[in-house]
Image (cartoon, rainbow, N blue to C red; front, side, top):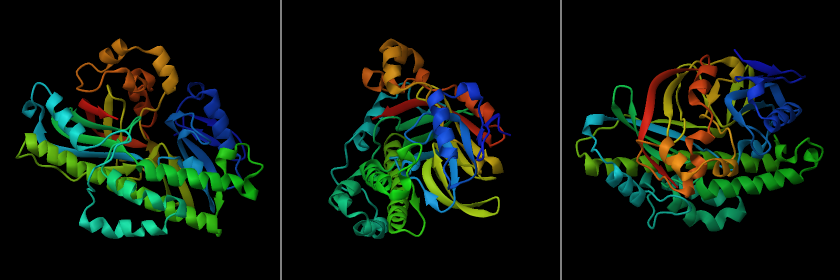
Amino acid sequence: MPISEIPGKIPVKLWTRLEDVESGALVQLKNIASLPWVFRHVAAMPDVHLGIGATIGSVIATREAISPAAVGVDIGCGMGAVQTSLKASDLPDHLGAIRSRIEAMIPVGHKEHSQARVRKSEVKFFSEFGKLHPLVQKLEKKAIHQCGTLGGGNHFIELCLDTEQRVWLMLHSGSRNIGKTLAELHISIAKKLIHNQKLPDRDLAVFLSGTPEMEAYRRDLYWAQRYAFLNRETMFEIYQDVMREFFPSVKFQRPIMCHHNYVAEEVHFGEKVFVTRKGAIRAGRGEMGIIPGSMGTRSFIVRGLGHPDAFESASHGAGRRMSRTQAKRTFTEKDLREQTSGVECRKDHGVLDEIPGAYKDIAQVMADQSDLVGIVHELKQVLCVKG
C-alpha cells in the first residue's frame, strides 16, 4: 500500500515517505493533481524526484488528454537485459578489452553509425518517417544512423553478474535525437493552445482528444516509442556480436525489455485512460521488468504484482537524490574511483555526475515498493559503458 498521501480532490499516493520528497517535487505533484484531466489519483514511485513540469517517478492517468512534457523529451527511454550462458569464471581477470570493443562498435554521446544498422525487416517502419512532423524530415538519415547507439547522461551498457554468478547483458537508452526533437516541437505547440493558458505550470500543457494537435502528437509519440525499442534491440544485436568475438560458444536468452518514459492506453478501475509513466515501468501481474541502481550498485530483474493503486507500475530505478551540478560540486574523481571499485568503467570528471552517491539507496527503493514488484534476480555490474 502507499506509504504516504497528499490529500486533495485528486490525491497523490506516494510509495515513499513524505519527508523524503524534495519540496520542489511536492509542488510538482500537487500541480499535476490539480489538472482537470487527471483520473482518480496520481501515483508517485519511491524514486520520485524533481523533473520538468512533472516529477520523474510519477504515474499519471488522464481522461482524453496527454501532457507531452509529462512524457518528457526522451520518449521511450527504457531498459533491456539478457541472460547469457556464461558464468563469472568464464570472464577474463581484466575486462578493459571488452569495454573498448563495445565502445568501438556502439557509438555513444552524440555520435552515430557511419553505416546504417537497420534490419531489412525494419524498412517498413522507417518508411513511416515521412508522416512525422514536417520539421523533423531533415533528420531522417540521422535517425537511421543513430539507431543502435547509446546516447549520454544516465544511459549505459553493462555486463553484470547475478547472485548465482551468471553473466547478464544490460543497457539503458531511449529515442536519441529524433525523440528529443519531436518532444520539444510538440511541447512548444501545446504551450500555445488556448486551454493551457491558466495552468499552474505551463510545462503541464496538454493536448486534448479529438483535436488535430493530439492526433499529430500521438502519431509521433508512438513512432518514437517504437524507435526507442528498436534502438535497444539493435544495440543488443551488436553487443551480442561483440560477446561472440570473445566467447564464440556463448548463448543468449530472450531479452527482457521495458519502457520507462512513455504513454500507454490502458484500462484501470473500469475506465480506458492514457497512462503516462515518467520514470516508471509497467508492472502488471506477472510482467517482467528491470529496475537499475547506479553504475556502482545493484540492479534488479523484477516481476510485477499488478497493484491497482499504482496503475500497475513500479519505479524505473534508484532515482537521483541530487542534481548533476550538485553532484559535481559534492564529489571528486577519487570518490568516483572508490564508489565504482571493481567495475571496469570510466572514472573521469566527465561522468562524475553519474557517481553512485548522487542516487538514492536502491535497497530502500526496492523495500518501499515490495507490494509493486517481486525480485527475480539481483545483478551487480562488473563493466559499465557511459556516453
